[in-house]
Image 1: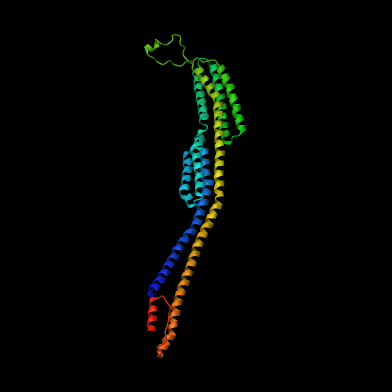
Image 2 (image 1 turned 60 degrees about the vertical axis):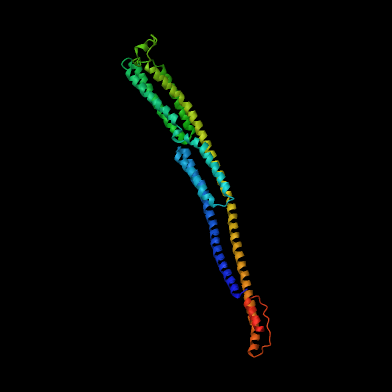
Length: 367
């Protein structure tokens, strides 16, 4: 091998080592960034699940606002697509499974429970109270119309109507307080006012009609042939009192149904807390695995740099050894050159080198 080829190989080896060191340094820096990114992603997931996701779900169950449920679903999707992928591969399936379980729960039980919560929870009760109030107003007009015929009975009607209106307003107030606090004392007051309403309605039912009849609608002559000749017109007060009694009796039923819905929502909230707590515990348990991944990354980087250092040392030793052999061969020529300078051409020299240039030099010295 010629010396210039050897020098070229040495130079190429040094350049390759320099490139390898630069590439390894860049790779090592990127690897050392991963623990920080993993740590940021892990604690971000842990915070958003325990705080933001929980807040969105609680707000939805309290208000029934579907946008809060949509925000919870969007949060899970964002975490799965942007945060989970930054964690170690061994951790990702565990978190994705937890997120899928929560997403399924949100789309089924939680969505159904939220539709019945908030302002929707008391809709039937509020409507019952409004219908009852409208019925009292209509009955008051009925009493006013019958005042000319039977003043005393009309006064009795108005007196009981006023009593019913007062009791109904108090029942409505305690209904609102009950659903705000779920106090059994407020529920007891609602039941008391309900009994008072029923007693007052019994008194109202006992009052005689005031003789106000509903006006008959105009019908065709052909239809009159099919009507009974002895059909009596409907008395307005009788119908209105019957409707008020029906509304009053339906209120406890609506209240019981609302309480069942409230129990269902409370159970859903409890199940939600359990589901979130399980997810939090699962996420907290992954911290050790992530720490293990940190150590594995550090070990890979240290191992690579150790290998490069050993490679550099080995190459340096090889280059040094080659240079030492060449130097030693050249130093061995000095005595022969001195002999030749003194005029002694009988001396022979053997270099024992593989280099083509040194072999040619050996032949020249011995010729």
